[in-house]
Length: 159
Length: 152
Image 1 (tube, each protein chain N blue to C red):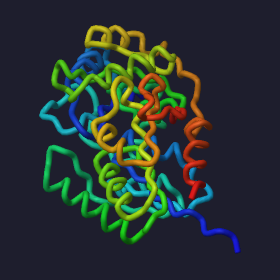
Image 2 (tube, chains in turn red, yellow):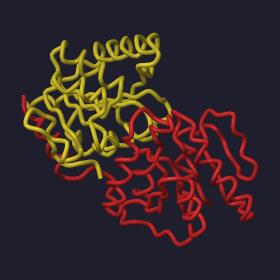
Image 3 (cartoon, each protein chain N blue to C red):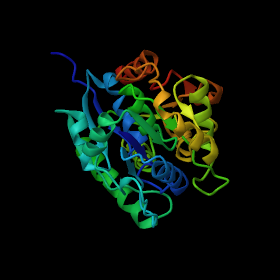
């Protein structure tokens, strides 16, 4: 399954439309999308506007690949479960988000080799055509890095 | 008599903020920790740990913001933490501000999603918390925030 998710805060029709059209043209019936509150009604893919945390986890576990906005919840969850993730950042220039934090974060995480990024619809479309080739990145540990954990432990221990 | 375990409130809003907070759990191993968030569905993530829900708020809806702030205040008066740790956003901001007034020590861990500039709430919270952290080394400055690793 391909699990598409745009987070619960805002719709991201620009991403969902591309995936829907691609699924239609390629007769893909193995796509499920969480699309948030929007008037868009995808024609070719299964979808829900929102998922409870339990269903989100199940969908993620059942997926072979994730396609999403550059939300850290989804990215961290995908890395944690060793799933390849294709990310298209929301853009402030298109009023999809308040500032370009998704673009900046996606580019830095891509540079670190953690995620695959499509900057626009054309790149998204092209990457979907070779989605089966995306490989999971190195699995991350279940918890934050030791440096951050130690910094917090030390702070809590001071009285 | 062993010393009393420190009481910690670990709070965040939903989505990526919560996923990041959950990745900090080993830091609270020796603490009496209460996890606080805005979605009751997250209870399953914390096992047997204490768990509370307060109303969500964002800066676009003043009434929701007020409800969230009152929820944070009520939670703090009941839990009375020694330390509050948050990964944001608005509910975490209220909680560290109020907790400070109630005498707790506070930590702001800015989201790893802010790779270019700190979050708005992170910028505002910075001068009011005892430990102000960014997860990107290039955003650390002498006046804060500090960089002490990240959730990855």
